[in-house]
Image 1 (cartoon, rainbow, N blue to C red):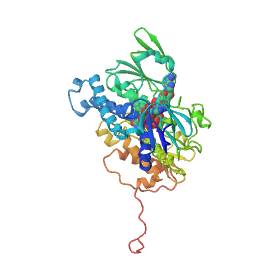
Image 2: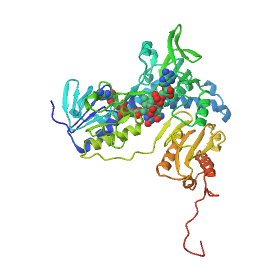
Image 3: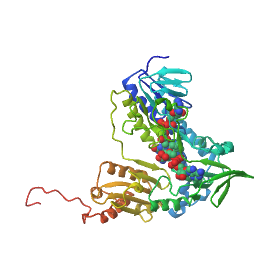
Image 4: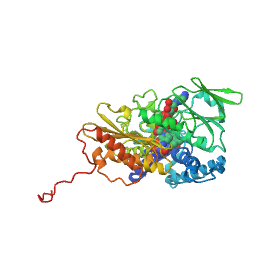
Amino acid sequence: MAQLLDTLIIGAGTAGLAALREVRKRTNRYLIVNEGPWGTTCARVGCMPSKALIEAANAFHRRHTFEEFGLRGANALTADLPAVLQRVRALRDDFVAGALQATSELGSTQVSGRATLLGPRLVDIDGTAYATRSIIIATGSRPRVPDKWLAFGDRMLTTDTLFEQPSLGPRIAVIGMGPIGVEISQALARLGLQVAAFTTSHTLAGLSDPALNAELTALLKQDMVLHMGAKAQLREVPGGIEVASGANRVVVDQVIAAMGRVPNMEHLGLETLGVPLDQRGLPTVDPQTQQIGDLPVFLAGDANAHTPLLHEAADEGHIAGMNALATTPTRFRRRTLLSIVFADPNVAVVGPRVADMDPHSTVTGTASYATQGRARTAQRNHGRLCVYADHASGRLLGAELCTPDGEHLAHLLALAVQQQLTVQDLLGMPFYHPTLEEGLRTALRDAARQLPHARASDLAACAALGVPALD
Ligand SMILES: Cc1cc2nc3c(=O)[nH]c(=O)nc-3n(C[C@H](O)[C@H](O)[C@H](O)COP(=O)(O)OP(=O)(O)OC[C@H]3O[C@@H](n4cnc5c(N)ncnc54)[C@H](O)[C@@H]3O)c2cc1C
Ligand SMILES: NC(=O)c1ccc[n+]([C@@H]2O[C@H](COP(=O)([O-])OP(=O)(O)OC[C@H]3O[C@@H](n4cnc5c(N)ncnc54)[C@H](O)[C@@H]3O)[C@@H](O)[C@H]2O)c1
């Protein structure tokens, strides 16, 4: 058995590397182990290649507005799919190289291999046992694909394999319309593929506001065939794979499974920790400390299935890295929830979902972007923004939106929610003209009209100067 370690990090993704940064500040008696390729899910097969694909798709899609702008010749443009995918891989390689720098000079403190827990202070890596004072588990997640669908071989794609394809289609089915399904199906449709999308859910991209869902559904149907509310079934037929969902049938060349992601937990030996595991095989993890019970074991990132987003994985890695080496774990207040889906228009949820708010004490302010001035000048006038405020205090509780440049509006709204600002506070801020932010002001004014004690004017009232002649 090797020397006693202070901590052993399992998984070199975003969460594991964030933990590593904290650990290296505190000790050199650590080990980081990773199974499979290094370079992080985000850079290799996640956030970055998907966004590179989306940018190409939306650049090409803009040609549909050219005639309206008075710009001629758009019909001559074509999408060279192999070249588009080649660019995605080239950019991806750059991002992966960046991620690899984090571990490039670690020497013997980094190993490749599969880690399995033998107990709360003992880890096996491919036959070698390591004793350690603490363990950080950051093993990430992988795409969920029903076992029997694997029989379709290389025609059954996930985001792990999609970006490696030399070309695609022409007929594609996307199963599942959460964030991944919505982003990928719209991008591929806009690049000229025939896309049919299926989802058991009645909501899209994580939205819970029914009005917004209806608008996003209608917008996505302009790009693709979309069937919602029934399970997709696959079978081999002459000429391709038939996807059936309720009464709907379509035959395609390839299927992309975007049906959610499963935490990488099997074979990890969590049962050796002696704590209860839920149906998914996951222990309870404290989101303020990332600790499992009172064990010296911490679980961070997608692996704990709390909030599988990049910035949350990074935060959880930092928390786990600090706490794994502390005598008493520090409890951290977590940031306001923020999720952005890079559809066009962007989709975002800020704070708790409206479906989880009390309808009796919540006021909704809304604004359509169909008529919004700046959006009209850009031929991007689609979507809607909803803000939710507490009726009694006027405090902004959250927002759901589907608007042009919604990624930026969502950050502004997250800032306001985290700072506990009221609708009136926000209306006291400057709104430049003409901007997409003016749509946010419209939604805030709509909310203000429904609040008790709303002022007649947006301008903040001046505090008294204490000079009778001037006050
Ligand atoms: C297509 C796609 C698009 C996305 N887009 C966005 C986005 O736009 N914005 C956003 O916020 N999030 C996005 N995400 C989510 C984001 O990528 C993840 O939340 C984040 O990458 C999770 O990081 P992680 O460190 O938990 O896991 P990972 O980066 O997956 O790292 C886990 C590592 O652990 C290794 N491992 C597993 N088991 C073992 C073991 N037993 N022993 C040793 N090593 C092991 C794995 O091989 C892997 O290298 C996207 C995800 C996908 C798939
Ligand atoms: N932009 C972003 O922030 C971003 C982008 C991509 C992924 N992510 C993260 O990755 C996670 C996983 O995303 P996801 O979209 O794969 O999962 P998801 O769980 O959000 O959505 C999966 C969808 O698949 C549907 N589904 C499941 N089985 C089905 C079947 N047999 N037939 C038809 N539909 C079926 C479900 O109804 C669900 O709507 C997200 O929770 C998110 O945190 C974030």
